[in-house]
Length: 327
Length: 264
Image 1 (tube, rainbow over the protein chains, first blue to last red):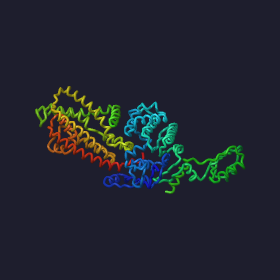
Image 2: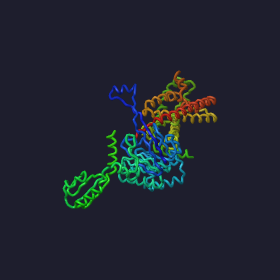
Image 3: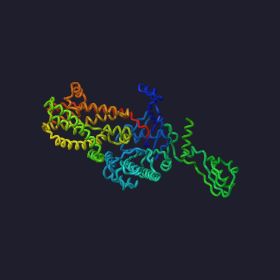
Image 4: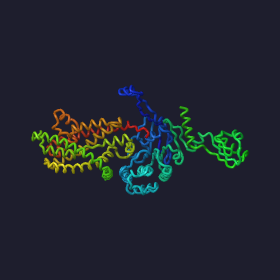
């Protein structure tokens, strides 16, 4: 295991003030605090080369977990071992093997070309000239940014900047890459390019990558394994495809008929999600989906039939809403 | 070589912000010229003020411009504004390079740039004022003055870093910054040379670190201190530096444990 997290907890002390002037006056002399549980007793392990998606709504504890893993935050409790190091000791030998990219923060010098920030990282990480040249050539080709490396960072588009941020974060060839919403604010084309890059990087260098994103597309395309977190607790940790079997009780069947049919003849087969005389979408229990499809083919003039899993985003929304209902 | 290359890269960044250092130097010039104007008024009534003549006090205020430009470091501004308030500290903490030295490398090119501008203005003012400079510096005294300047730089930098990292607890420390600026203005020798401060203020000045950052380096360069006095200043500077260094390490350890950058 390259990453091992055991019973990690992180509480923040949050100041609570009574509303109004009286509350402000009171808080001058006495402040009340409560413990906000950002991460609440989570455990997981990640192997070398895995690409894991960390999913959760705002305030779920994703970024806090990432910051504990990188060593930016001291955990309140639990044990963390990454590459055999305790992250919050932030030993240089550890820091040379990891990298954190935050979609909304940048490390590049604003008024200089990106290449100067790369050179600074080269010196900080003590990368030999030959290795530096090789990695810059490879990464800039993969990200198609050869032409803009000499351009002042302030003149670059958000997408171009993000690509350069990625290069800056990868110059030292980290074994573990933490990506915190790397595609935030990018247009769909740029999102796709970044996803392709992350995938290629993972395959080429066998780097372990932990990704948080609000865009399900990022997770669907990149991660075989996902960890769903909400209110600081892990709701699901497993294969992306298994979440469908675990949480999606139904499948949807879309049927197009050659001739119009009436809803009365259809409705006993499942729950009707949408109906037109020549097209119907039914929701049926997953175990019965093949049987229902057979009945439809036998009893109706079917032109086209399609059995689909519900989309991941819906399933995850269900996971969160079930959790919210149970809290 | 590595540190030199890092320094050189930070220097390039300073060139891209050349306007900002120039504005700072301009403020030092106006302050010095203003205080010099007041003290020149005093010299209309007398030829000597304590151990100061008009020419030595004039050279003091002109040297003050260079001292303020080079020695009065301001790492607290980017530390508070960029690293703590904007949350860029996260990225810096994950570099295998100590935060103190990252900030040191970022600050020193600014000081050198301002120092060069300060020296140009110094000679310009000598020409404009037709001033006679009063220097009396031997080689040994010059070397010791250089040591005093280097120690003063580290003292100021470490002191300002301590001030800056208190923002890890409070975030907002502008009040503390302004208070410190006032104390520095009075006790570092900006208004008048420290030995011209009235009674109790002079005594307080010798107990605080600020005189060892500005006042003593200037009078050391002017050759106003004998070797024994120079060594004594160095001794006190070293003690201050040790205290500040330990203070920084202690507060940094505590502050960074406290640091909680909540999500984005």
